[in-house]
Every structure is written in structure tokens, then in C-alpha cells.
Amino acid sequence: MVERKLNAARAIPARPPQLGLSRPDVAWLGGEPLAIVLVGGSQSAARTVENQVEIGGDQRQADAALARWYRRQARARIEEVVAREAHGIRDPRTRWGSCSRRRHLSFSWRLAAVPDEVLEYVVVHEVCYLREPSHSKVFWRLLDAVRPGWQEQARWLREHGQELRAYAPLIAGERHGRQEENGHAGLRRPTL
Image (cartoon, rainbow, N blue to C red):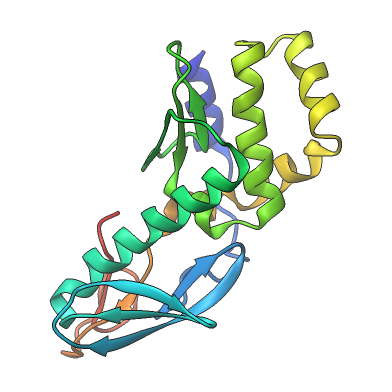
């Protein structure tokens, strides 16, 4: 079944980007762009200040600081929706969220970038597994009852999921006139 789903996902033609996630020096939070501003200083840290993400430390540390910021944002946003003690933020390439047999909820850090209602749908979908651990008719009825209109958020994920899965934020580095694989000169992608 997993192989069939992977093959089906690979068969979907690549769509042109629509969300603008590949814009350099932009972080995404709640479906909204935030300018990335390198502020220097001695501490490698990123923080949200008004409509931007300020990253301290030197240029080499900016990637790690932004990666930590994304993980904190995803955790905070998910904790707002689910008041559970067992959940994790990871970097899965095939799922937005999962619920293990031990009732451990895990979510993709990329959910920090999606609109609130889409994040809430993913979290509620996984929480429904705590009551009904399969995609049975009972599960879908439960999801309908607790999240009416969830189909719109699922549609949003289908339409933009490929772009989100490929998303790796760009931070402008020292410009050496070189072209990276993304076509932007001197840009780096942090490891999330």
C-alpha cells in the first residue's frame, strides 16, 4: 500500500510553484511571509520581531539558527492546537503528521509555514486517530463531526504539498558569483 501511494505521488506532474516559498531571505509562518534579517552579534539565534525574523550570529551560523526557529515555531503552533504531552516535530518527506501505535503524535516542521486552518486540520486528523486508529468509515465520520469542511484544507495540501515538501528556506550568504542548484547566486539552504 505504501509503495502504491509513493508511485501515485511520483506520477503527479510537477506543478509550477504558487506559494512563493523559493523567495530568498523569506521565512514563512502561518502562510505569511516574514523577511529574514541578519543582525549579526555574538549569539546565533533567530527570533520573530514584528513582520520579520531577525537572525543573530555570523553568516555561517544563520542556517542553524533559522532551522531551530522553524522547529520552535512548528512546536508552538502545534501545541496551541493539541494540548498533548507526546508529540514530536520532524522532517518527514511523505507525511504531514502521524500517530504511532503508542499514541505518539509527530508532525512535519513544514506545518509552521501553512495557513492556520490547514495546520489545525492536520493536527485534528491525527488526534482523530487516537479514537479511531484507521481510515475506516468511523474515522471519516469522526473527522467530519469535529472538523466540518476539512476537505478544503486537505485540498489545499494536495495542491501545495509538493511545493511545501521541496521547501528549504534560502538565506543570502556571501555572494561569490556562483550559481547554486536553485539558480540563485550565493544562497544557502539550512539543514532542517
